[in-house]
Image 1 (cartoon, rainbow, N blue to C red):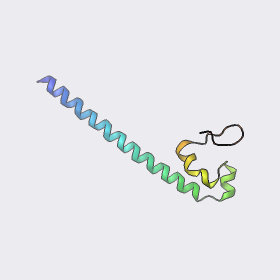
Image 2: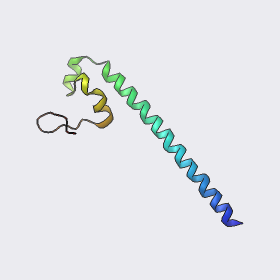
Image 3: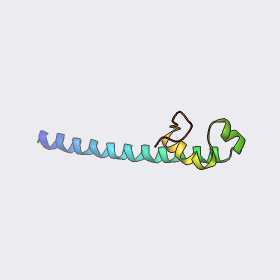
Image 4: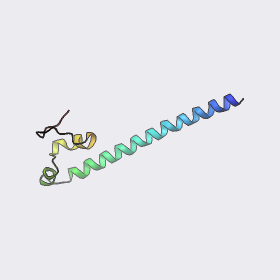
Amino acid sequence: MTTQTIHHSARHGHAFLHIGEFLARINLAGRIARDIRHLEEMSDHQLRDIGLNRGDIALAVRDGRNFDLIGRWRL
């Protein structure tokens, strides 16, 4: 009987891990969308000051600013 109880609890705990991961991904997607909107509201001059152009906003937010030494995206 204890084996079934432990097995059931382990299964239940595993489900919570999936829910937690799902909620974390939703939270991350929301933060990415918010950060993209914020950067898109900036002027071209402000974006240049931080080393971005409009075409790089989504990539920079999702993947970080990973430039090589001559200022190109390193993919």
